[in-house]
Image (cartoon, rainbow over all chains, first blue to last red):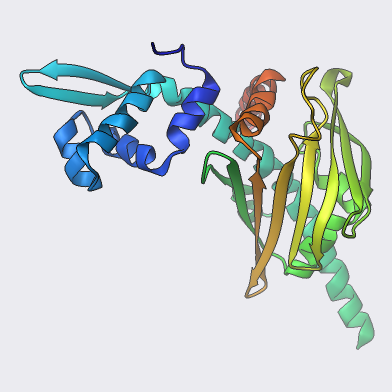
Length: 118
Length: 168
């Protein structure tokens, strides 16, 4: 039975490179599984396995249309990952903006010393 | 600060289940980046990221030497990290362990230490900094990620962004 998706589960589901490829492919719109098999160049059982992991964390939804199974991206499940990466990027960006100030000062000091040496 | 330096954002990616990679370019040669990264008084000026007051920066920069950074966030909440240097190549690379001191009760924080590799790569006087954080397992990586979410950092950041936008 599928567990309730936690943030950590979604991270793990998305960390696998092949699964990221599948998500990228689905970002362009709903796709039948055969399309994904062709695009990724993997055997169908492998693609199905990855799709199952993604479904378990809610990252993709599936529906049957005639004889085809159509998969689509569920952005809502990926939001925790997006939010964490963005938050972590902001933390380091602000840290690095402060580091820029320190580095400008060190550069000026160094140039000052060069002039003194002449 | 010039507009150009202020707008360069850090890039964060998740290369594998256990890794977090942070990258950013600086308009300075690597020996100055190294100096700013390894001199306690200088680290104290940028490590806070505007999230609080830095209260302690200890750096014993040699293989086997210990480090500890502590910040007091708003509301008096203390955030500490410590670890040990494993490899020190001046102006090039530092490999060090990192332990987050706010792990939940019952978690062996030392056993969950992440291994960080700081790399400085200079081209034409500009230095690309990469920090690769490698956790021992997914649980460690998840704890890292969840610690950032649970302390309300996101709310604080959103608020900060709103304030910053209103000042434009």
